[in-house]
Image 1 (cartoon, rainbow, N blue to C red):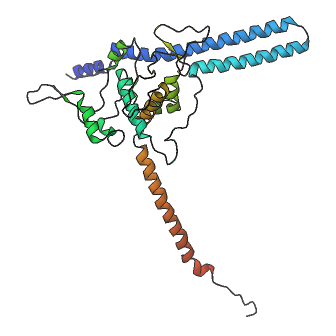
Image 2 (image 1 turned 90 degrees about the horizontal axis):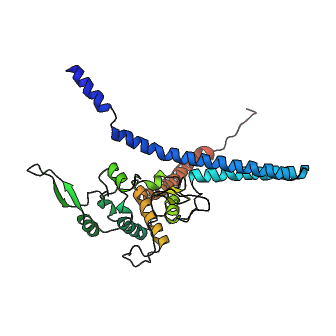
Length: 326
């Protein structure tokens, strides 16, 4: 029996074929991006060397040779910069967000509009596993509105008294439902690409808020000489330049409840604000608590300084006379 238990334990720890496939798929994309960036870097350096050689052969004097070397150095610098951009994505533009200040809070009207954009556009592929309907109460919706939103979805629950699972209307304690049951189903529906969970997206990426905003608005035609692989789309803000997600935001794609014109830029701004709130829903409370503590500690500091001066006043104000004669 002991050998049988040991054998069962080894079998349980042994990775399955699905685990191996997921590991290989997660490793394949970064390797492809690195290979593409390395190839582009080598190609651009080769072009710089060729241009320097042609320029130096065209004239034999020293001035032309130095000019050619300078042009080659500039070309190699540009090649390295372009290769770095291809590997890590285009430099992100910086925007001033309303909640960036020390005592600034989220734009809650924008958070509500962003939830509409997520529900009607993003939720078809991306999950939001860390957010429940109760988190929306007092932030974007009233309690009654949040309950109505939760009741629109069917939640699998159970077992009941007979041991069977059943469907029921959603409650405030339920999380926002995911579009796919598991990762395999998500990859099968998206040609092998896995749409990531968006709960912490603005924290999981460098300069996440500006990254999400730039990515949503960064779709464009590829430059001359760049061939986009099948099933991919060109977006210079995505590392590698090619992304499996198509352009999703178009003017008028969502009808806002408050009548705000649903332009592409407005929708990108609103959904980015919503994702920033989803990644850090306690930020407003934390800033408010910090302001209270700063005010309280400033009063304590004033009282401490006053007490210190009072406690030492009889020592600092006394006069010492030294009679050297006696």
